[in-house]
Image 1 (tube, one colour):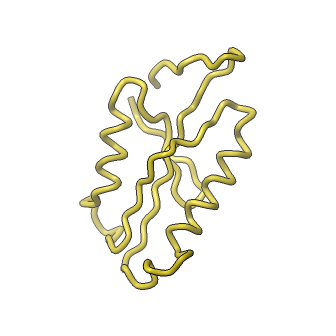
Image 2 (cartoon, one colour):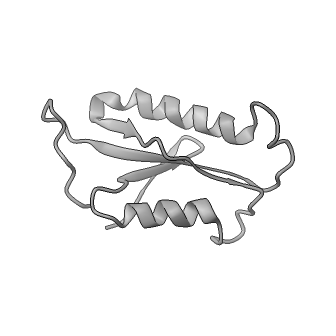
Image 3 (tube, helix red, strand yellow):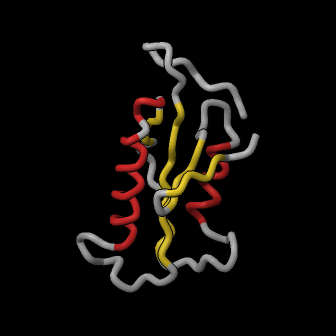
Length: 103
């Protein structure tokens, strides 16, 4: 795992992205939809890990209307690119389960 930056209180910062996906675009036009619910759940989990240095990345990685049957999803591709950059992401959560990025 790549070296993590030190935060001001000497705790390791773990930059967490939230990836959401829904197979169809049905209901995505609602004020609060499935992608919002997934994000809310992941945000709550990350906040519960703040004592471990976990922080939420503000960028959104949402793939509404994309199947999970393949990896041809724009937001997933972008999140993976961000993970590959120095100072990028350390983990990506979907549905409340942590998926760390490999080195």
